[in-house]
Image (cartoon, rainbow, N blue to C red; front, side, top):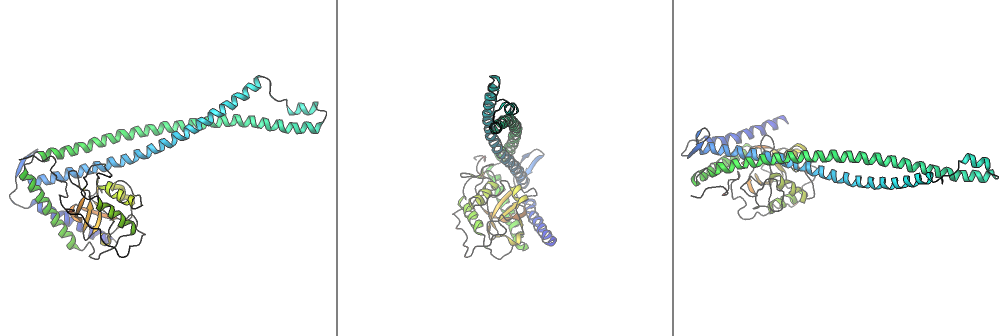
Length: 382
């Protein structure tokens, strides 16, 4: 098992080295002023990749907080419903207790059973009456007990509701801070892109494509990915079909459809439409779903990227994935090694493979566009 992990690690570093080799290769590249002076287009590409990765990491953190906030809101709604019921019961108990207090004040309380027994001509009849009176006394006692219990329950629920609201407000403030962090990262990307000429943007795109192609060749040649075609599970087939139908829709951070997606929004919704709920964020998908070796990938499995699992895609087969790449891009088909690989997970490891599987038909232009999200938005017109 450790041998497999070492091989995967070597492949990952090999892919990253291939990309680095392209970035550092000598050639005629333009330069633009940067914080430390003139920067080559290769250095700008590295800067952009770093900014995109930071933006995506912030996005996934934002998404995780958003999920926590959803859960807190559900809990708060459930507590509010319980509190309303408890307060209704408390109100009824107070009315019953008030009626009891009025009866005692007006002197309508029953005579002690012991006194009735002493004064009665017919002791047996008095005993029967005593039982009735005792039941009435117990009913009065139960009324008081219910009032006390309802008060305690309502107070406890009110305390929990206040604490839940406080946590909700704290999460909302945290979410706003994380949203601002994402927006700042994306603004940095936009500013960097806006400072480039059309020629430099074209060079960035060529460099990115060359880096991806080299990384993919290196990865496929390593043998880490089995050449044997595998069939997905029934749910995996449905999830992949859903993901393919989303090709062409824009990447929007925090989006989970139906008009736009971010990376984990696409994968979580695809599996949800297949009838299986999985965590919302790429980090949680990596942390909680069963791992599967890259050599055993089957369509529908999720492929995770970067050391902190900040990006995720869905395996299509033949070394390709369906993904929502980054801002400025659209859902598309990409080489599996377009980003530094971390590993893979399978949402339904115990499910068997379907027979007679046929890969979904891809729409025209499914592989068009940059995998790193370089788009026309923010590019200067020249």
